[in-house]
Amino acid sequence: MKMTEMFLDELKQEAAGTRKTLERVPEGRNDWKPHEKSMPLGYLASLVASMPGWIDAMINRDELDFAPVGENKDKPKEWTTRAELLAQFDENLAKAEAALKSTTDEHLMTNWRLLAHGYEVSNLPRYKNIRTGVINHWAHHRGQLTVYLRLNEGLVPALYGPSADERF
Image (cartoon, rainbow, N blue to C red):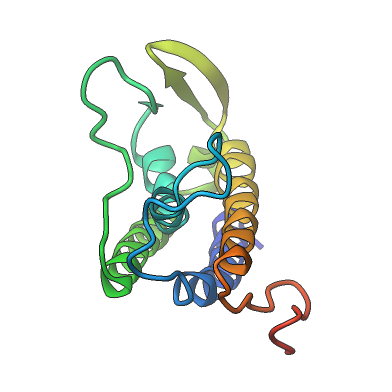
């Protein structure tokens, strides 16, 4: 099996759980956060919805500066309705799928650079960046979002096993 096919399979599996989570994000609570050091709920939900789109950047760009000096054109979009949030997710998921379908395993073996303020943070093969920088990182933030759901009296979806609110 090709790496691209494995990533497409994994993307499909993770997307299902992400959609279930995003469908439960409360509207009108975008500024809520559990602690002063935590990111706001709206930003976290946008981050989770946008992360699949990073795969497109990792395949179709040579580098990305996630904290450029000046305006950050790659920051997650703001949303007010759950429908807008889900549309953002669908758009980013489609970008990821298209990028994976259009690339080769050979290309995924080439290096991709992640920068912050122009400084190199990472310079690893694209497949490693997709695995750790998107898939694993995405699961982390989705899990964080489920905690926000619980603290807002929302129902936590079953993701990798049953939750207190949902069985398989």
